[in-house]
Image: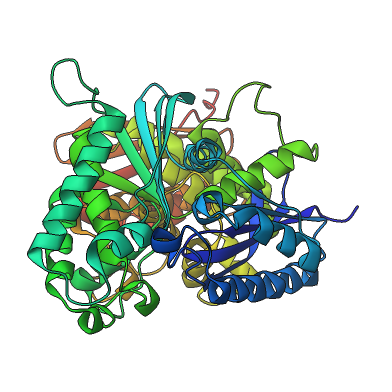
Length: 528
């Protein structure tokens, strides 16, 4: 049977974006292509309430090109949605009819509440919502969508006219931004959010436990902050990155102090977004203030991904949302790791054995490593994926694994967690992590410690199945002073396994500052 391939085109106020994906069962999919063209469809909308002819022509060309890209993947269906600019424009319906006639794609303008719900569904696939009060925002060129929820249950949706393109045209213009204009913009955004969300105070909005946001403004902010910290050539994934409220405020003040030309050369910022970025960052700063939260998690996906999941549901390959409720983040993590391992044709028995032993070591040594449940899930995924580099080649396969994991579509993991996971798999064998290794040096200092500790456990677990016989049934640990004794349970003498585990103990002993002793327990007694 042919694989199920679908395409989504999101016709936004600032850009047109294409997502091509292949269904993998359930609501999981693999991204095949992701294209963006900036057309600025909303330009001039504030003044005339109509879409400009030039912007419409640019947008139509982009849609035609994306249709051809999608057809090249032999997709079964292409869905098109239009958001704020088309909703607001008097000639929006006529423009959609023209697109349908000239491209054959059934575009529809979706209301702001549906846009918000699709962004929420995307965020739900990547972040831990269970049992938490959640706020999700999607920042576009024409509007800001906000969802307030309890776990996976939506309580309120809002669609506000706080898009970066519209606010720029109304308040800032395209040249140097004066302090008075910025203050006017801030007052307007603050008042709009206050009226929509409710006043702060004893009876006002209760701050969420988690705030997630998507959109070009968020990803641009993340890239700029990474470039400022690590240099213009920094190679850092930004999905799942945490943006602190103080850093957002500092970024806003910096960008507002630059003229239009200077902003075009800010590292990490695309030149075609330089004119609207100040308005976008201002909205992010003010919504952090309005929600009374100190940080926001960046969702590198958004409306297109939510729509892709719904298409899979409607075509019968996805799991209906009313079935057993959305899967937990833990399930998504494990499923996506297993899918990549299967795609790379690795030995499943060995991977399951290493995963089982690695998690037993993690549980037995909790007082020593002091890591959490999210770290345990990263270790389990790294155990399933440590061998995937063999699909590239035997030599340096652990290094190949690092790159494969980094660029795979692992759902349920933030980009920070994928960096940690890829590094753990990278160091399951060979030389331990070193500060001169670029992949390791780019990690934050606390994350380097997590990598060293998880890699130390994974090296031992893989050593305990070196002969791939699955003879080690379990591992227990005794912690006494500066010595750790691992008691390996096996019905047969695991000579190769014990030798290899001892050989790989260097990172463990160095990281935890202990002596490691590995012995067999459960050996059959000899009769007298």
